[in-house]
Picture 1 (tube, rainbow, N blue to C red):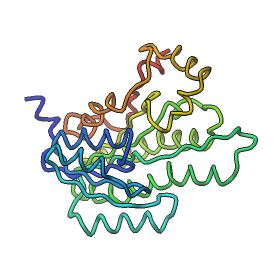
Picture 2: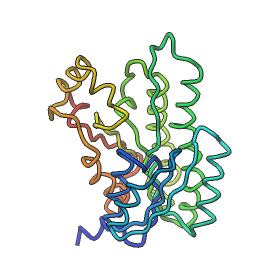
Picture 3: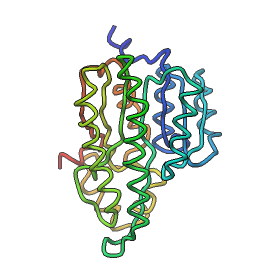
Length: 253
């Protein structure tokens, strides 16, 4: 049965940034499909996510780590490898965005966004992914963006990091596809989360965004749940190095 290929029974998934928003929806989707969930965020409150995962009957364990701090990042990796025998799925969702016009965009903004959105994700994928490659099985999903394809406004660090994520997706896939590890990415469109609140509250920007989306509305985190299950399941075993846009048609306009 084709639907059996979407089941994640017996799998363990790391979902970074899973304490709220899109990451929380990814964690919920994978748990509903049968996976146990490891959550990590720089914030310690996983109360809501823990309740959501518990309702699915799956196990949940949370960690706190600051991905802009290399020592904290490596401690997280060490702790997970000590606590779990194997990781089957890695969803690199954690990210941040800092806005300021490019002529005023400070080094601190650039460095922090690149560290969290790109450098940390390379390290996490290398460290957990090499174990997957040795075992001959794994699923890795990066979270790209519409700004993997476009430059954006006032967010040069974010645009550069998401362009880099698109390239990392292909780079890892080129080396690991033959080892049973699929590496792909989701590029969400304009999704209503805390990260996009400023855009939605700006009447001019909000209208310009909605005018371009063929679906005529902002997406929700729930709109991404089916795609994450597909990319983390055996239904996507022959998909490698792809960036799947879930954007209401934005990129086709």
